[in-house]
Length: 40
Image (tube, rainbow, N blue to C red; front, side, top):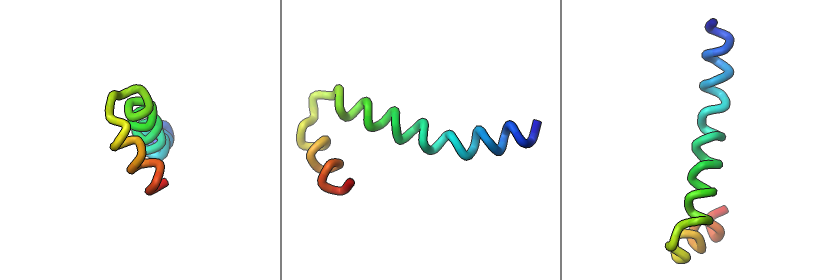
């Protein structure tokens, strides 16, 4: 139970990052995408 919770907490930030990256790539904000690419 707790091990699964730990795994979930370790994966969650990566899931959020991937979701944000996908949203930025598909959104209509090229300026935001450019800023993210410049920072990354």
